Image (cartoon, rainbow over all chains, first blue to last red; front, side, top):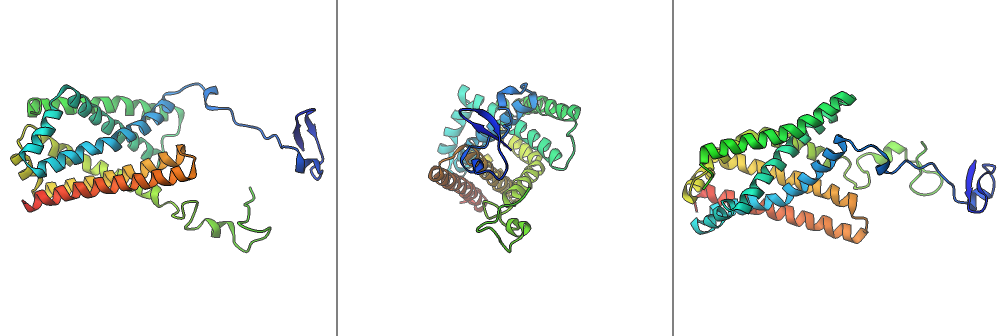
Amino acid sequence: MLVADPQQGLRRVPATSEAMMTVRIERPLSPHLQIYRWTLTMTLSIVHRATGVALYFGTLLLVWWLMAVSSGPGAYAAVQSFTSSWAGRLIAFGYTWALMHHMLGGVRHLVWDLGYGFQPTEREWLTRATLIGGILLTVLLWIAAYAIGGGGR
Amino acid sequence: MTATPPSGAKSMRTPLGRVRNHGSAHSGTTDFWRQRLTSVAMILLIVPMVVVMMILLGRNQAGAAQILGSPPIAIIMLLFVVASIWHMKIGMQVIIEDYVHDGKLKLASIMANNFFSVTLALTAAYAIFKLSSGV
């Protein structure tokens, strides 16, 4: 078998040789991530995880809101002043997108779990659908929210 | 591929026997299954959740409290809170296991993740029960 020797480079030693016990065995390494062409599926894999983390902390807002409703008008007013502020609205919009994107990304993963959609064209289509669908659903929800709540006072 | 015996050169245990019901976390595929179970639950719950949110838009505290305290809506909220917090707890644990390599820091992070998730879940449940009992 082949062993790596710092002085002599690769050299062949018998598989039963004592050299095997002392010399580090050089095994083939798989190329590192940056060697591959960057793809949309790779981006969305990271975005799925990132939106998951965002939603993890965003759940604090949901629980804060539930506690405020159950506590009384004062606590509820505090939440409303936050959600009607510029920053609060941006966070709520971001939360909506993260939720929609992560949900569609999850559906994509469930499709893959069932063994479908692994062809290059299929997985590319699924990935694009997740990206576009997430944005589309978010915009639709916010249009509906503004139409119903008049800006959600 | 040959499996390495857990101890000694020879073992009576078969590779299947060693992996059955265990794995490194000693819980097999439980988290994998629950992650998918809760994801499907949330897909089913997202439409009612969106409807509830739309109904609540622009209401004052008394109005929102009355709607959230009604049985079907309280149950929808409770189901969504349980499914989502369970889901996010497992998800964060996977991230911790992926990126935190120091053993003790990993242990502390996983514990903190559990504390955070359980606290959020019980706080939300407390609020929902309180709204439903009209206190």
